[in-house]
Length: 162
Image (cartoon, rainbow, N blue to C red; front, side, top):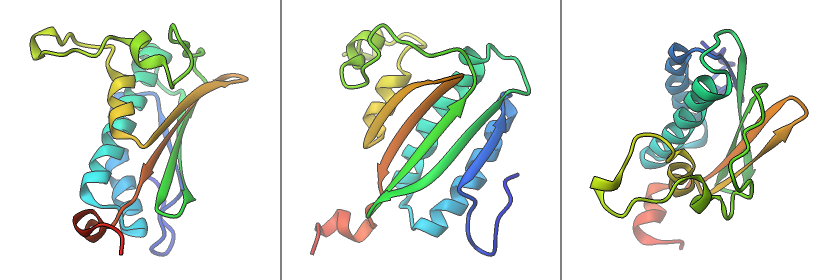
């Protein structure tokens, strides 16, 4: 479990490439939610995107080989924004179109009917839908995924900015 410092959440979570380590994500995010006052709906989106990204690294990047490292860093990016950076040392992830702005169509077609949904291939679409910003790229050895989320207090969502 990530260590906590005097009511301040650790900014980094380090996981091993095993599915059971995903259980460490929620407690870490709960601590961050308290520190940054993350609303429940945004916390859900963050968890969903990070679980998708991390499980893909474990299953596809590391091909299920345990004991490889995955790090997740949380940093305030701007007022009311948090950025989560997922890094691994797996082989480079290179979709057909490596530009995240145009990758939506090249990763997997977005289904228009529930009957057309097939398992797999929708991770980038899912993350693009729930995250405010999304980018990825290769590291010298591995990959980096950045996900940004706007942290809007619930009162502002209902009434708008004052």
